[in-house]
Image (tube, rainbow, N blue to C red; front, side, top):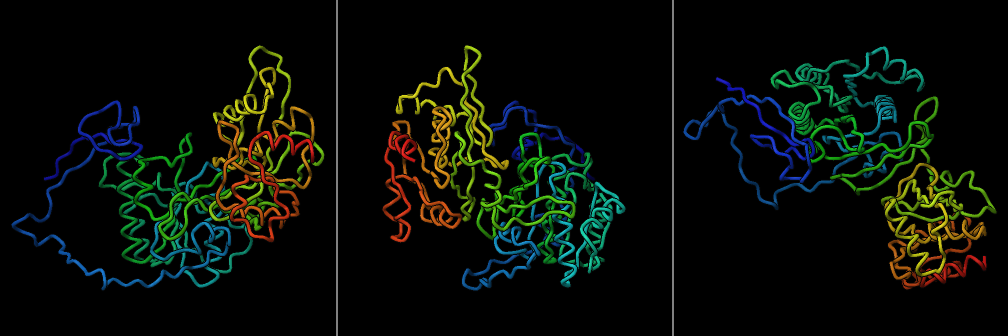
Length: 457
């Protein structure tokens, strides 16, 4: 007979304990343990009676097939790029993002394309009625194929639907609304999310069905529920961007079938999401020319170089303590760069407020934007505009040196393609620069060299 008891789970990593603890021993998070009821049942077989157990045999490594996974186009090149070339049959993909960012929209668009090209699709929604889904579908245009729809939250019923429909592509929207009756806890709890995801993973692998799970995110931007959810799936995608903004960024933070940290750029319109094939041009659209406090840099998003504008406003403070504001970059990094400017360039910013913003709603963590941020701040301080065809990238150290960065030739090619004629970059990055790109490059060694270039624009 089954015995009911309660255990404590860590919401962040899924660590299990018989008692509550203030700090998780696994991930070191504080106040992350929640109590969940579980049901412990006696196994069907024992060591002496293994009739109910499944036997497994080891296989030689040489006998394992190494055939490449064939991929199914999704109809959206940006999504295929993030997935590593297309949809892999039998994979389990988790798509997270803020409410209203476009998660359901992009999956419905993919379902529309797949059905029009002969793929059987099952769309299961636990949050919306069939009428609500139909209204969204009508805004996308006429569906040439037949997308099978269901509004259901019971996992047992969903399993029966998958067995009856035998789809090739299945969408579960969202995993936090799905529950299993055997688990005596509310939908969205640690036990429910982990159990439902485990069953859906087995269903995807055994039946070679691609399943997309939609996940809600917390205020910290992580998928709600146990962190072990991200470890169970094959691919984790995040939709980034502001709901009030036009552009959406789809980022892969985990991918067993391709590169991680790839980014796809989309534009939200009346008829759904459209691809942005040249994001650099879109990000620089509307850039003011001849204005101080503005510079252009190039960042690497996965394997894609992307040009961004960095704006800085330097204004005399009205209070005793100057204000620092960073949008799109790390606040502590901005304070570090301001300290380097004061110490190594001899520019005092103690009486000035400094505001730095990366346009387009992008968030950048790589240090290659340091040089562009410094040039924007100095440009705003002296009220001297940078060159209209100048672009800068490079990491700045605490001694004022400009250090090398990765993929410098690829960044220079992207800048030249968009019409930039002077590329300010670290001197050490010139060692592997192709000859055809050297003419437009201006190497600098220290932050003082970059300041002198600004005055000689």
